[in-house]
Length: 270
Ligand SMILES: Nc1ncnc2c1ncn2[C@@H]1O[C@H](COP(=O)(O)OP(=O)(O)O)[C@@H](O)[C@H]1O
Ligand SMILES: [Mg+2]
Image 1 (cartoon, protein in one colour):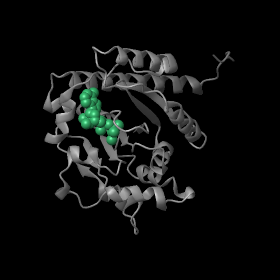
Image 2: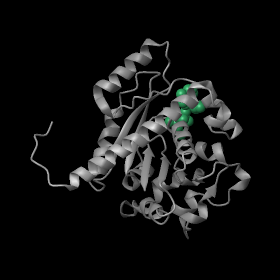
Image 3: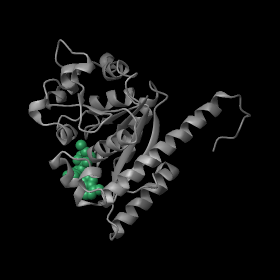
């Protein structure tokens, strides 16, 4: 099971848009996928569920005593093979209530459903708090969306520090990639931002760039993925390409892990 945290402490960088459309892209390709909304603003939740459908949320599992099993807060979506765990405002209390030693709660909950899903996508909140910590302890991979609209990189080093810190207790956490989002093809600033992300992170930057596309803003209001709402749009094309690129990267990672298991000649570290 791959657990991919979509994380970046700034708001508006495309985390939720990426989480929702990547999760759908994986499910459409036949992979059993669970989308977990970790943001108390609930944007991923309302992209798939109407409020009256929801009785239990992630805060019933992580925050409110007595806590419920995760399976009680899993809802099917209109996309076959895609389930969701909704969020609500109370999830923000996790920042206050969870003691340091309880930060593996999310990881333990996800392990209880590990035989049901190939992918779990975590839509993280826009800050560097306890919820993000729990996500990074539970994740196998982190995907970092960087908006190309403004000078986006100040503060990215803060996130790098958080990732390195999480890698101490969770050494298997891998950076799946940096994703440049909200790319304006006519803007020099967007091109500059893309170049800077590439200079900083090289091959970790996805070849797929998510272009600006207003259809990505409209789709959630109709509770549709971009593939249903505007199948011929840039948004649909780009998220489709991203899903393919991620599946390819994970395949490469798997091969790399197999190679690591074999005895290797000493090589100089680059
Ligand atoms: N590629 C894009 N083109 C146009 N609008 C986008 C794009 N990606 C995201 N948006 C819009 O930007 C806003 C913030 O995106 P969102 O995914 O919610 O970011 P985050 O979860 O990081 O706060 C939303 O209104 C969303 O519809
Ligand atoms: Mg969001």
